Image (cartoon, rainbow, N blue to C red; front, top):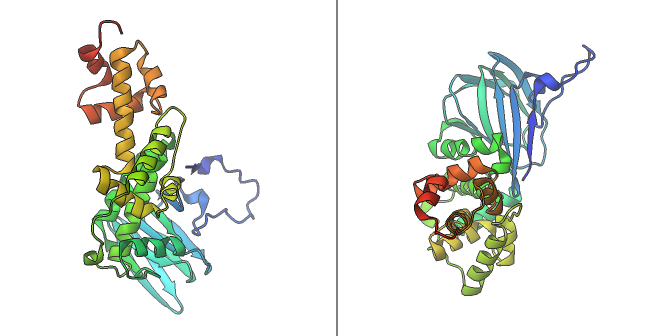
Length: 315
């Protein structure tokens, strides 16, 4: 997992004649208040935020990069898209979504401040998602502009804390959000009917044992694991693996691993004199704040209070 944050104030502008630097979507970096990136397995996730009322034009040539899906986190943005000699204007409200094919030349005038989460969707990844969801072969996504999509919008919002503090979030969490996005895209925009979803998948005994062993190895301090790597060990695709793991255990891999971390923390709280900082580090949490937040959410009480109620006499 990597993150990349751009701060326009840090850019040097030594000459007035130089062309402004642009990102991979044609946006002028100096006009962006925020430009962040997260890697979630095969997917690249981005957040682009601009406060200016008139942003200017974005333009990208046709490239073999798959599809770009963007969802607006706020209302008030408008873009005028040029295709050939024609132009069309589109207003974006909260959770308005667009899908465009990188195979097409793209040129648009942007106005109004905006805050978007973007998902780059490789063609091969999309086809594998479609194959896991049904027997229907998904080769593309419907081109939509400004279509309201609360499901995708809420999935995007779940990523916002990770954009700001990526070290506090497990790669498993990011990959599972990305896969949930992909499953929604192939169902709603890839021509896959929800009725085509296969029956509940489950893991074989050896697959479940292997997956749990790898998740436990990745639950300790400074350790990590990915859905893709564990799925490969089980000889499954990542999206099918998540469905099968949940079918066998009742949890997603991230939820199961988090439950093991919480259980480990409870053991240390009850039977050791380690500080909360030391326990947070031993159980793979980013810091004490992250540990306290996740423990309180799972158990319903802060770890310090839980320790006072459950600590053994010899701890």
